[in-house]
Image 1 (cartoon, rainbow, N blue to C red):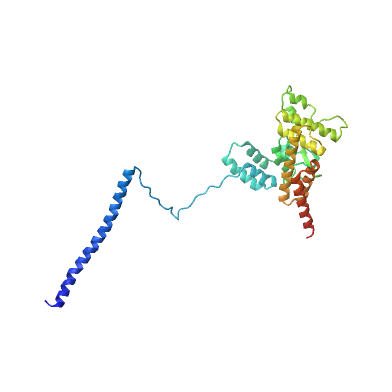
Image 2: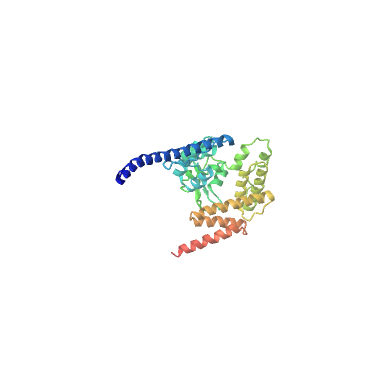
Length: 314
């Protein structure tokens, strides 16, 4: 046998051998995988807990998000009190879809959609706005409920219920009664508050503003003691409007005074942020007439005056 023949025979033998070796390698790899799988199952049984296979979420899957319902207080302060009536109505309807039994939201939607003239009556009387007045305090005083500010604002054609100017003339429905009178007629005749408040809002002829303010302060304390906090604050608000220098008659009167000062200040800040500087400054003037040391009012009033001065320079 020559060398060429030997090489040819070797190639014929080597081909099948190499192919066989490749097959063995594949089988070996597959066998290792099967062995590892069996080993894992054995370990799971020994440990008593199954293996957890973590899979990555599909990148093509759409994520669903739920838009939270806006709170009722945010709807009132952010939309309704600023005259954003269309946005407020949409937000109220969305809120009521989630909270269908919320009476305050139902009332707000009713005030927003009903005809004010039909609701409150076409006959009205004039009222001149005083420092510290708002549609909420006027609604509490003359409609018996501060939350009816919205329909009172619409009754007056207001596009922004947060804005009232001192000296502005408003319409008050003749069918309405002051909150103090409503408080008397809504209680049993034999109740203690009825006896105390029988003359609420009715002072002696020729009563001075100072005397009336003191009487209203006494009535507000009486209302507070009998659980009528909102009406008590309305009475105290009127007392301070008549006499800003009225001294508190006791701790309860002092507490209500501080609550009203805080409410005036917060209302002024809303006006300030809406760039309604004149009514904001007027409210801070009212706060400082009551308490000249009320520091937040001092600081913000100075800022408002500075901004107003700068605007005049342009």
